[in-house]
Length: 335
Image 1 (tube, rainbow, N blue to C red):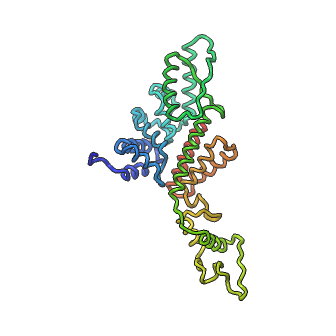
Image 2: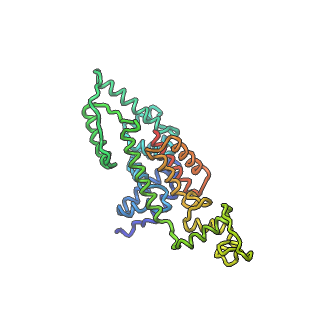
Image 3: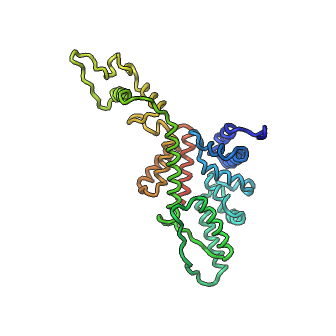
């Protein structure tokens, strides 16, 4: 390997520092991701986004890399909104369509992805009407199998686009809840759950037997006043499992001691919940709950509400950035 090439930690630090900032920083982050992909092998690149403190997922890294590959974006930087998902959408469009949207002042520093989509769909429909003076007829329906992968869909979309352009045919995606969007959501839901499973395996596991575990939980429950009451022995002394007993292993422990121990050792309790122990895991659980095709409207609304709280004021800078990224993905799904 070239001695001048940088290692994984170097790329990871550069990317993390630039994440979730303004347009220039988004473009810089995209460039850093592209640098990392060029200098690291595929396994090293993938491992970056599986780190516990990774600022975003491999899927997001792929999209940022696509942003970096677009040569038009730097020339229209002053027209770009400060949302990486919208910038990615712009990068995925033909340069001619992007320029048309700029000329129409649809693409500007405050625009949304939905506004651009509506403009381009309207322009396409208008152009199709000009290209044909005859009535359009429904030719048929396309159905894809349940195991249709992202790679299959990407290749199919490219082939379909060629056919549509060649024969000047219009195509309308099925946006119903049972359309291909459901398949995409299911795939994404499965990806998130796989990440969650990998994350859980990184959590510490205390090598306790049942008696040790019960003793710790009993002591903690007494201190956190969860209703556990231990009777005194016949002679009036404290029971061996009573935290007031000087011989108890946890005698003298404070609530903070128990809380810090629970966080350090990834012990989930009623008073030390998963969002306190592993904020990134909690955020991904909320995202999975929103993405899940089987989730109810109230469940999705609840997940989105909690993510907004996380993005605004709760947790550290890293967890807030992760919550913002999750909300960006939700916005993309809603569009």
